[in-house]
Image 1 (spheres, protein in one colour):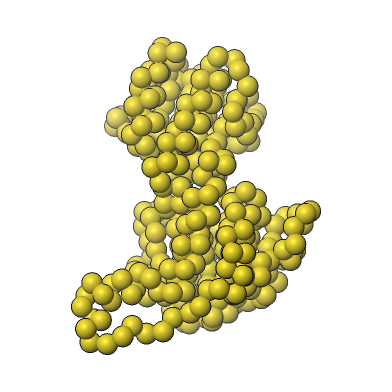
Image 2 (cartoon, protein in one colour):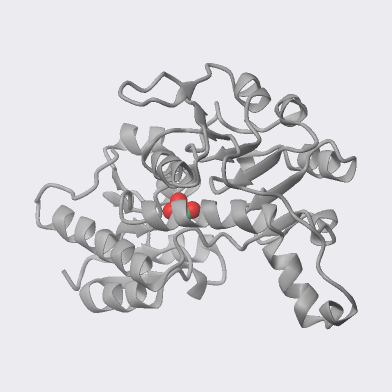
Length: 313
Ligand SMILES: O=CC(=O)O
């Protein structure tokens, strides 16, 4: 397979990059002065693209690479891939589901606890020497709080299972009611937000779920409510979230993702009732290795004419 051209869209994982380099003819997008330079020189050699949640395969790339057969994404989310165009052109698409579910769910719980119990703020309190001047303020209990989850797929269900361990009543919103759960279903996000204290975004980003957290939802959650986002930045209307926090219409937020990563709204940086993470939901050594192996396994399956391990298209 050493002669098969594979394009890696951005640096994402050293092990993955090294293995791709060993097994294929690897092109690194960032080695070229511009996309046009790459496309001009190599458009006829690239048969596979490996992207992630930052740079996938958009319409321009798909049009520019006529020999592209497969996009093997180092992510579970598919929002950076033009799936419609891939389908039209018969380009296969794979992602990395399941292997990252536990890590992302763990991180959602960590964000809830960190936000309610002010873990980061109290860490700063100790480091700055403030403890010597007095005890840290009281925070908010998590056990028993009602948790609303948007999207009860693999990750949403894993978050629910963990929150059950904290005796939290669980409710959810998704396109359709899920059979076989005891969690309460709300057909509208506003209704879900009105009936929970912690609202967790765990759905895929699609045109329908863009800005699913908007002013109305935030107001329904209220001044004691907390938003947790481990999905995508675009799930949240960020200026609305910021103004609700500034005005005290929302109690707090735990965010792993942002609209314009790695840029985070300036106002959030100064707030103690928010916890801000650099998009690290699946960011453990173990999980990133499993994701890389899935990417490689899908590419090899494709080029050996075997069934894909995790096909999407
Ligand atoms: O954001 C990360 C992913 O989609 O895997």
